[in-house]
Amino acid sequence: MKKIVAFDFDGTLTSKDSLLAFIRFVFGDAKCWWGFLLFSPLIILMLLRLYSHHRTKERLFGYFFKGMSVEMFNAHCQKFAETHRPILRVGGVKAVEQALADGAEVVIISASIDNWVQPFFPQVKVLGTQVEVADGRLTGRFLTANCFGQEKVNRLLAEYPHRGEYHLTAYGDSEGDKELLAFADESHYKPFRP
Image 1 (tube, rainbow, N blue to C red):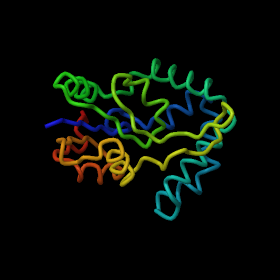
Image 2: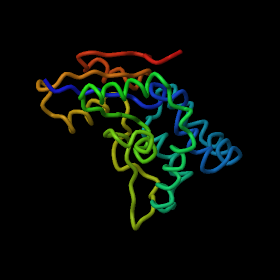
Image 3: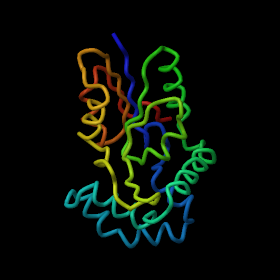
């Protein structure tokens, strides 16, 4: 039977949230913290489950990146992956490498934007939140639903629809991974913590 091994990115393969780290990398501390302060009411409402993850993240993303050329954005994503390798958990990297060596198909399913996740693991498929581009520039909106919670299962099934034909192993660390972990044949919660 085919083997698919699915990993969450933030907190599972990394030791910190990559959205915050990426914004700080591109814009510096001052603009980053000002943006988060500006959106703190929405972030609090999201944490209280009174406002959606998708809309909060999209509005925050749009504040920082709307109007940026996709070429510049992708260049930032590539450089971010090159300079931020230390955020990767050693155990997570080894697990990805082992799964590939064992012949499994490896996929990273993440709420993070796939443009900056993919350069960390160019050898695997990434199903992340995708950004909308028009005329070569980011619109500030998402092309897909935020890849969080049930959306992780939806995206997996869109890519691999014949569920009875593969054994699924999933790795995750947060509330956003619960549905994926429950859907898997074998699941690992917070597996790479020191």
